[in-house]
Length: 415
Image (cartoon, rainbow, N blue to C red; front, top):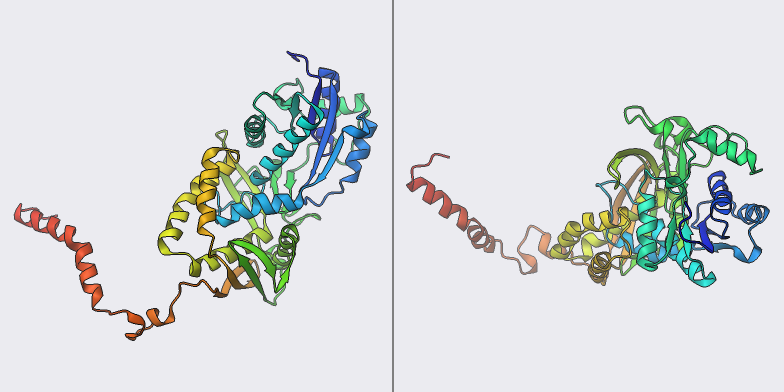
C-alpha cells in the first residue's frame, strides 16, 4: 500500500476523531514522521486541544503547526471572490470551497519548510473537497505525494473506525460512537451542514440542524420584530468599514456575521450539483456574506458602466465554477480575477441596508464615482438628453427586423 517510501507527511489535522484516527493510521501504515497542521479560519472551535491531542499521539512539538489564517482568508480569498458577486448555481456563496485553496497553500508551505515529501487530507472519496485539496497541492508542488486515507484504508464504516480508535486508545468524545446525524464544516464565512438528517430533499431542515447550539444564524421566525439599518463603506470593491468604523478584514466579516445572524439572515436549504457527479443537499448559514453580497451589488449598481456590469455577470458563473471545482490556482482563474479587479477601480462609496426577519433591503447608496444622473433620468428635457433622439435609435435597431418582415411579405409568408 505504501509504495515508495515516505519519510514525512503533513496532515491537515482538526484534532477531531476522524483526523486523530487518520494520524494513527498514517503512523501504522507508512511508519513516517507526522507533521500536523491546524488552520484557524474562524471556525469558532477551541484550537488549543488540537496541540495536546497531537502531542499525546506522539507528534513532536516542533512538528505541530496551528496557524491563525483568518485575516489572510478574508483579505486574499473571500474579498476577491465577493468582488465578482460570486454565486454557484445562483445561490451558494461558496463558503466551503473558498477555504480549501488557502488550507492547501499553507499545507504545502509547511511541507516545503520541514522537507516533507507527502501531504494528507481527510476528505472522503465521494465529495468535492478531495478534488479541491489535491488539485491545489499539485498546482503548488507538482511532485508532492498525496495520501487520501478514505480512498486507501479498508474501514467500511463508522463501527470500524470506532473499533480502531478504541484499539489504539484514541479518545472518543461523548456521543461520537454513533454516526453523527449530520456533519458540519465551518469557517468565518459560513457553516455548512450535510448528511443523514438532511439527505431527503423533500423533508424540511430539522430543528437539530437549524436550531442547534452552535448555529451561525437564527431562523427568520426567531428574529426580532425591529428592523436595523446599517451602512457599509467600500473602497475599490472591498468592504472597509461598518457604520463608520474601520476594521481589519476578518473583523469586518465577523461583525457582519453578528448583525446578519441577529436578524435571521443567511440560512439556505440548497441542493447543489457536486463536481464528482452527484447531487447533494445541505443547509448553509452565511449571514455576513449574504449582507455583504447585497451591499457590494448595490454600490456596483451606481458605479459600474452597463457594459462592464453585464460582462461581469456573464463571467461570474464561470468564475464561481472554477472556485467550486477547486481551480483557484489556475491561469484561467487568475485571468478572470484580473478582469474582475480591474472593474472595481471606481467601486467606492457607501450603501445603506435594512435587515429584518431574514431579509436584506437596500435603502440607499452613494458614491463620488456614481454614474447615476438625476438630470438624465428625470422626465423633463434637462441634462442634455433629447427624447426625440430615441426615434432614430429605435429605427436603427429595428432595421434588420423591418427588412426581414418585408422580404417575408414579398415571398408570401404569413408567419
